[in-house]
Amino acid sequence: MTQKGNTSELIEKKYLGLADDNINSKNFKKALKYFEKILKINPKNIKALIGKGFIMCQIYEKNDVAIKCFKKAIQIDEENLKAWQNLGAVFFKIGKQNEAIKCFRYALKIEPENKLLLYNIGLLLEDVGKNREALKCYEKVLSIDPDFSPALNNKGGILFKMKRYDEAIISLEKAIPKLSKTSLIWENIGKVLLKMGKTDEAEYYLKQANKIRKKIL
Image: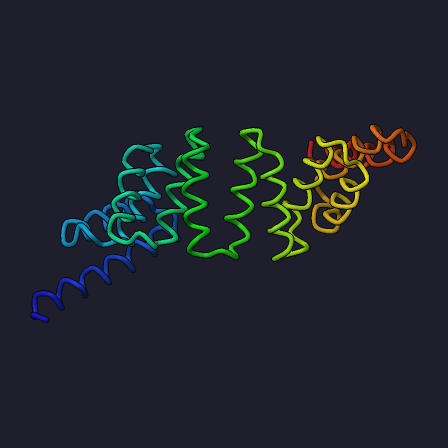
């Protein structure tokens, strides 16, 4: 390797460190400048492409630019998990659920036991009305982490839609220890109990939900 090559790599590394420092201190404008400096030196620097794409999407709402950054990163390294995750997140944000699902599913091939990826795929499938497929995702999440409360809550919600009320209650009640301070879990259990004709029990849970809402207000 030439001296020039070594120097360029050192500069890129230095700028990446400075960009990360500025992101941590929420100085996104300055972080973006460092990412752009890196890309002038090396347009194929994947970390800089992903960093720039993240800022463009999350801070400046320039989703088209972000998509280009993430797609370029994927062209360079098709197995880059962060690039696929971020591309999926942008598509999710702009309402392109089917595109987002494709991205997250590809990311899942890279890291099959990633519970957050599985959970996000479940959310998207539920959003497009594919409840049975979403349920499978949440069940897979719970096979990895049985106490993952968002998946327990969402699984309960789908079982409720399917009129599988007993199973819904079991799933929702398992989520209480971690979601006890949120009104949603109490309200969801109350709704299921009402459908089961258990009015007295439902009233207790709905009252709990109201208490929490009043505290927030």
